[in-house]
Image 1 (cartoon, rainbow, N blue to C red):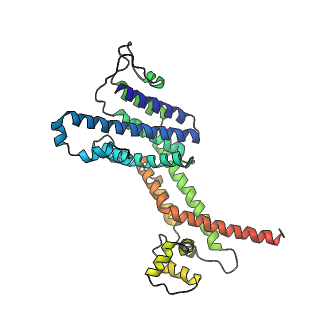
Image 2 (image 1 turned 180 degrees about the horizontal axis):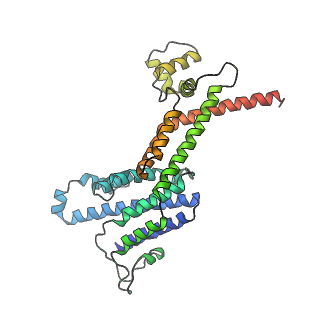
Image 3 (image 1 turned 30 degrees about the horizontal axis):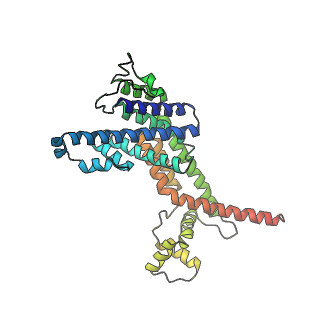
Length: 334
């Protein structure tokens, strides 16, 4: 058990070092290291529980979560997290945050650098959360072999009296508290950075909607509500989903303009009017949150709910600006 705890501290200490460098690239590594430490910890807990039940048949017979434990022994992160929550290793709130951070971690690992604006704040928040969880991690036994060689980074956190006593059982939670203090996480900063990024995204899309509503040529001007509907129906009209919906719901027109108008009236579009005022209210509510776990959950929910329409707004505005640039170049004789 001591070697496992030392390995966790070794990894968390490296994550803390990257945090201290205050760069977005180091924040990426820190978040991934923190997430891996949490995954190792909850897997180790499941493994120890499995071993305990195998050793004591009378406990195994009465244990109510055998199915969840068996699933946690596999490779699926969500199953491990579910079991940790059942056993009280993490709270409901912490579990939701871990799940969201694991999603960020997967994007950072598989896609590369993402979420640059908020990444340092995310990494700091996740590290502090992980320290709280690991600080109360159940240590079942403290065995180690003679001559054990602890990872170099972990040694500074252990109380070594002599070669026969490389650590004490209280060293691990004390180390987690020390690292939590060193990371100096401020929940208000996390909430502010998430809210600021949301405000930036909303302002950006407000501009896109203005560009689309203004149009390119005389007579193309429309209301923002109409522009919002149009930027959704245009890509929908070329999709299999849009064509199948029209076929199933009795569209009888022939022209593209008729099809677009029909979709705007009949298709259950996610946004039927200018969403910016409502989005600004959501950002203000997020900013007023006193809990960074709730703020993060609301931030991610907003980003996921609006992702498709934000992409549509960006593409429509970009198409309008390309056409404007083309006209300008043409008039200049280019």
